[in-house]
Amino acid sequence: RLDSIRQFHDLGLSVCIIDYRGYGQSGGKTTETGIYSDAEAAWRYLTQVRGLAGSDIVIFGRSLGASAASRVAARHQPLALIVESSFTSVPDIAQELYPWLPARWLSRFRHPTGEFIRDVHCPVLVAHSRDDDIIPFHHGETIFGSANEPRTFLELRGTHNDAFLQDENTYTEGIRTFLAGLPGSPWSAN
Image (cartoon, rainbow, N blue to C red; front, side):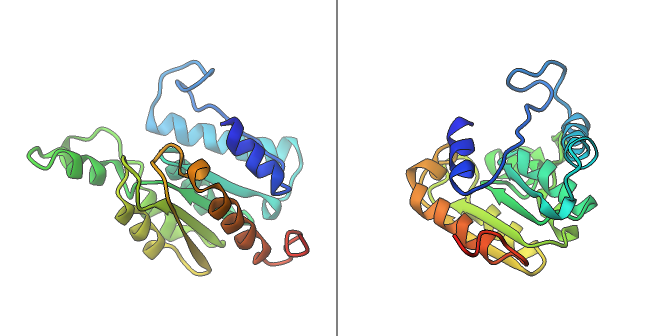
């Protein structure tokens, strides 16, 4: 994630990044509830320990992390939410990958980004690549369609894990433009 951190710093953002339990350097067992708890813990750390106003925080989630990011944004009032390369839900993507199985009903995980996004009441940027080789583009379009206004869609080029690098100029300029349009934005002068 160092490339993402570099990009966000170049955009003038400070970054708090976490490993969900069971991912990266974090111990523990990965569970859907645990991922949500970890995301809430990050929000509490920023707002209660660091003393940041929620209205100064842009929540970002890529792929699976977008469900946790959307859930936190739906429960709090951040400045904005960025959802990148996400699926509408695990059962939806499972059914597409395994159409001959009752995958929608067999899935142990939900991660319903498409549902959480409906309860988000801050500006939303949805970024997705037409070339995404893991999560089809229409998932991004559906998430965008479920988001409340104001919302922005950023179409990228590149695969699931590197569109933000393959199409870096489009990506960073799209985020910069989105941030500049936020109410009281300090990015509008950049």
